[in-house]
Image 1: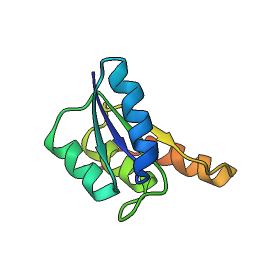
Image 2: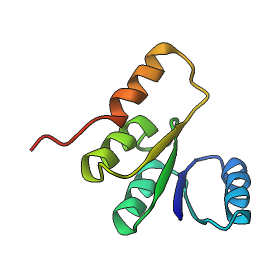
Image 3: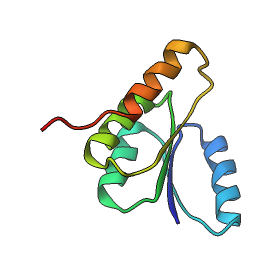
Length: 100
């Protein structure tokens, strides 16, 4: 299984990476939203894990972009944000589809 983590905190990204790699997963890390989207476009991933507070393109918007081009790609949003509005925004972005 090939996993992409988009996380701007290097220590946290390293910790998560070690855990997944110890379990045998192929794991990549992007440190901002633009880099994350570029990696999604360049390679095949089975799962994308997104931080919400990312530089350049935040996790909510990145989720929307991924959903528009790769609607079957599982995306997991991780955040310390806990307001109802943040949760609703996350759900809305995760269900967005491209309108043709």
